[in-house]
Length: 249
Image (cartoon, rainbow, N blue to C red):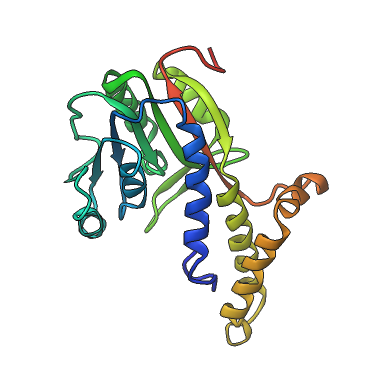
């Protein structure tokens, strides 16, 4: 998300640790002696995080490059099992306290999203949940093509899809650390559009944007709402899904 914006090296770690704090709170009521299924694990940051507080983690990644990094990261951690394979054809075995989809659904068309979620429902243990972390937009869905095929859906569209799958939305929460950093990214994008490349000084501009976001938080996140401005364009939300009662039942 933050490559090419001149942010300090620690920006990614800051965002991840802040998001991990939110996830810990969202998961406080589920069984931590059980297993986690992390689909679309990437390089394994979340798999490693879950391994600290759950008995077993199954991490599945389809990209050759990302899987190599995942396997290297998780090899020293005995309670993580890494699998290289397509998440759509992966067949879960056993039951899981948590199924984590960390930015996976936006790379799938709606039919594949529904098929995947329906396949996961029988794998949830007692009181088990599916936790989705997905980039979202406020209005109509935005579809990217070419080198980056992606579908940014609205929160209401995800709610519709979850309900169609037979899942209950237990909780939805905006990912504030993501939004804060996305504000900085979108500001730098505007900077790069209006300033000639030789004068951009991305390291300086990126550091200024990053620390302005950090030091101005939370007021800087509230400012667009106060001014009636839809900014940033791209957001991110956590969706906690289960099969019992919830906010959309």
